[in-house]
Length: 407
Ligand code: NIG
Ligand code: FE
Image 1 (cartoon, helix red, strand yellow):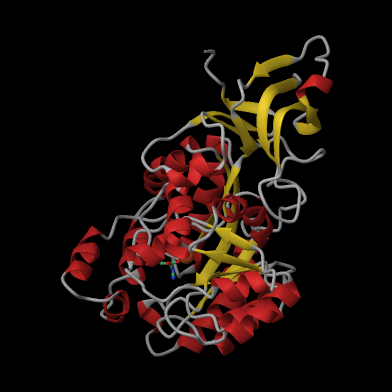
Image 2 (image 1 turned 120 degrees about the vertical axis):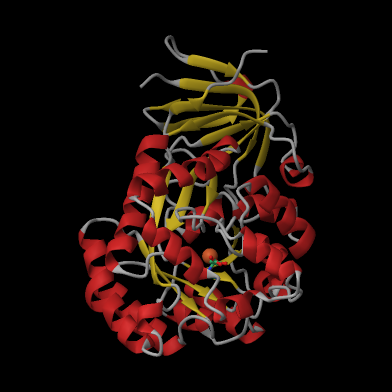
């Protein structure tokens, strides 16, 4: 693999405890797919055979990480968007058999090929904005065959589009209709059959549970977490999105990588996230689409030093958004994150939410060379402006996904 030297760049390294870790007039060398050196542009001498990219002062960041998506599914839910505009709530639609269950029916009907074809443009939209790692959850199958079908499609998207995809099993996302009134029996099925089989096929990097009154109780979540522990898999939770059931505290106490949503997280439970190194993944897309008004407890999360990540939550119901740049803007405007917090949330802390912070997410020697070069000179530009994609070039593992045009 040829070496590449980025010179005359503004680096946002995310290599310190906070801020961007900015280095102006800097250079970064990539060897064998990894960051081999970075420092002042004046200190580097390109060796023979090295490709030199003059960045012209532009911003070079770690490739972006979208650590929470549900991008593999059949159909759409534009009809529910219309119903919500006429006054129905997300929870009411779910209780009437729509919502996640509507997507489950469409996903069960779709072939693996159809699911792949439908998901590909969603992933491509993220990649066009500098994403080099994304997570994709199952959870619209709710039977063994369809959950495994979704995870296979997720793996194939990674292989064919040349992006790192982390696969999360979310069998406990909603109760399938054939288990109506028998949630505990469904959890037995998840733990005795679905999760062990998906894991045995090498399709599970982490296990997630939706803890909510319209989904599963903390006690049911615990049983899934026990099963994950037996299989040696890390856990996550959708928690405190619509009410406070204590799901985030439960997951954090068991060492969860992340707990996600968190609008109803109580300030007392924030300390448990901090104590266990659990990342708080904020999802402003769902907050925006569902027109929520209750904000996650940002001040308490900051005061306790909980790592904050941001993600698209791309899904057909609560967040049909496929732009991580838009999410940066929503995180700042709706949740009042600083642009530095927001960008850290889609780089280093996004990586941490996936357990990958030693490998990706910052510009540091030894890390994988996942890089995005932007037609901006200041990082805040990425969160500030909406509707222009300034992504100029993307390198994934030291190989060009998109080369910079010379100008
Ligand atoms: O993260 N909260 C639960 N799950 C998804 C929504 C899934 C859907 O509505 O299809 C979320 O928002
Ligand atoms: Fe989600």
